[in-house]
Image (cartoon, rainbow, N blue to C red; front, side, top):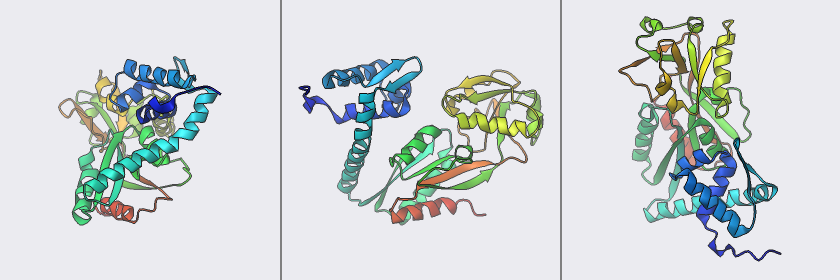
Length: 305
């Protein structure tokens, strides 16, 4: 048996390890914890040294767990989440509250369109419930919900449209057409609405399928219904980067009216008729917090049918 001194293994190191195991991308995890990539790499190597174990296979494609790493991930992931929740609840008790909700929102949404008003209304009615809001990419907040790190998430419709997620319920809220975002100098910018077929000559900017394959699939399905394949000329790592990459009058990307990162001085959003988007409100079926239903109702009241 190895003589390993685990007294110097910290909760922080366990958190870093679990997140890298889940994301398989050290750059995203470094951003998540507000660390530099070299600092996070050193912390992981320090953990491996303390445990005398190789936890990851490192390559250009990312970080993959070794058999030893996979075992520790399975053993630690729930413990780390449980400890985080217990500490969070202790802070809630210290503040004189007894209940909590963790809500996670897609980081490219405009939170003032629905989440912040719903939160304010709910807090006025239920002042004893503490609400914590997180913001991240679609695949990351979905992972937070699956791993019970969030009680409810607000994500994009296409990320749930064709999924059957065990233990997850969801509802489409705030339905709206897709929109094409483009420069105001784009020849299509003068139209009040577009057809998908109007975009045949456009050059599409997309979120990389490495990060969100559902986004590319959604665009391909939209165009296929009109008999053409999208001319995808640029892939980016996140929805936040889409606007930054509109560099010509032929460049477009697909979003909807809830998209937050548009430069209104340079760009415009034009609705695409006969399409469906919106945001999804999703929660775990086994969540027993009775007041979570009340929170969902506050969101629904912002969108009367």
